[in-house]
Image 1 (tube, rainbow, N blue to C red):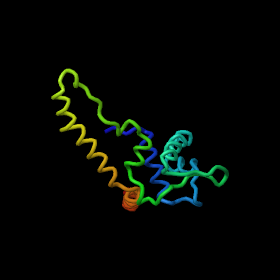
Image 2: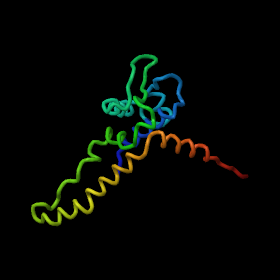
Image 3: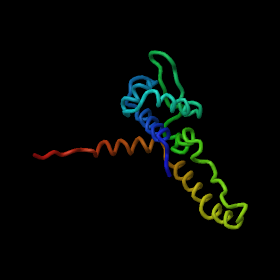
Image 4: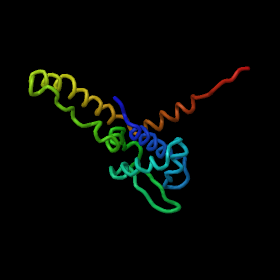
Length: 148
């Protein structure tokens, strides 16, 4: 599965907000962009989609920015990626239905439908809270040793 930059950056931005390492209720896009090393302009487009999906809300102005609309344990990876990757979770198109309906039916029933269902179920189980916890564990174990 290939998730676009929009999906990857949006997921990273949601994790960054959920970590709560920022001052104030609302986090400015520029602060998130700097933390993640991403383009502010691109992140604004990503946040527009997240806002449209009801995952974040925003306030304009000097103290403005974005914040989650729900607690991190109430938001899952499927919701985030669905908001950003409209075509990622569309049903697989038919390919040989006219020439060979039996083969098309078999592919849909045995491969594509179960695969779509498994991916969706897996992503629905991963909460933003769990992603924050994993990022914290990785950060804590990421010690470098230098020997001369």
